[in-house]
Amino acid sequence: MNRRAVLTYITLIILISSSGCSDFVEPNQLAFIIGTAIDHDDNGIEISHQIVIPSQISGNSKGGSPSDSENFLVISAKGKDISEANQKIQRRMSRRLMENHRILIAISEEYFEKHDVSKLFDKLNRDPANNLRDISIMIQGSRAKDFLMNEHPMEHLSSIAAGKEMNLNGLRDFSSRQLVIDHLSDGTRPLVPVFKIKESNVNNKETKEIPVLSGFAILDKKLKVKGTLDDVEGSEAAWMAGKKSFPGITIPWKDGNGSFSFKLTRLKRQIHSNSADDHHSIVLSVKAQAYLLENTTSLDMFDVDNIIEVQKYLNEQLEMELQKTVEKVQEWGPDIFGIGEHLHRQYPYWWKSQKDDWGENFMEVDINVEANIQLRSLGMGGKRLK
Image (cartoon, rainbow, N blue to C red; front, top):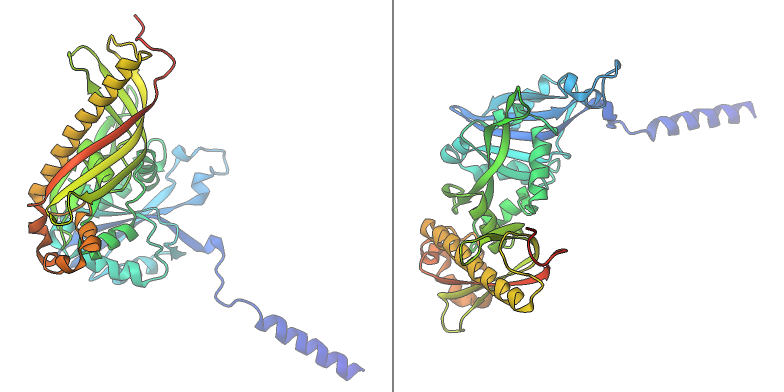
């Protein structure tokens, strides 16, 4: 009995020791990367990681708030590629780098100009630590590292602030995964949000440099910047590209006295050809529901005739604005609207002769914008208050 008990005891010890996870890492042994910056270096690339410090965010032992001390750190390294730079960063860290929770990847305008950005995708796509759900943006006028170094007055971390700013403005389809898909597609080109670091008054005594969404960059097949739209034009382009943006519009009334402001919801777009024989004549239709937010005209919006007239005028003005944006994009060449993809699906045999030169062929396509905006709410009052 004693021998059997000893054998049983030894067996239990072996089983318990062998069933443990040898590679398990506790959360307090991880460094959570919130944002990554990619900058040009003469010998390759400079990678910077914005790493959150949980103990500072939750407040220190003395009851301090997050503003009392830094709640993040930015650590950088240079290398021939992302992996080499990451290894250099890891050797200087006391915790293992964790990229799965990353919100944003910021790439400097200089890097777009001097490097093949598509090479970044090999690391992002090959390494399972990258989930490709993070947002890809371009930093204009400064280093991407400077974007990470800026402390936002409300969110503290610039990566979190930029992510929330894009979500609030309906810009949810600009992930790294979508950038890869647009790049690999023959009939669509990428549209990338652009952030600039600008000085803003945070109170009567202090100004801070805050990264703000300032436009959208249009990229060609080689991911080179062909042009930049401002924030309004970019929002219009994102809507027509099926990326759901453009949350509101203000239009002056016909007589020049007053204006209307609308909130737009349920944004949709459709692409179709005018005829099966004419591949170079395209209709780009946009749809939305409009909610009247402000009326500074003399019109009574509880009058049915006025409702019909305003809705018609809204569609006419919107069509004019969107048409200007389409023509501006066509001058640069890249098809950010996905018209090539539509033609690819509709006319696959014809498309084979077009796809290699689609950047030039897209410039010759006759695109007509049609708007179908339906007024759904007029608010609580008909006339403006006097």
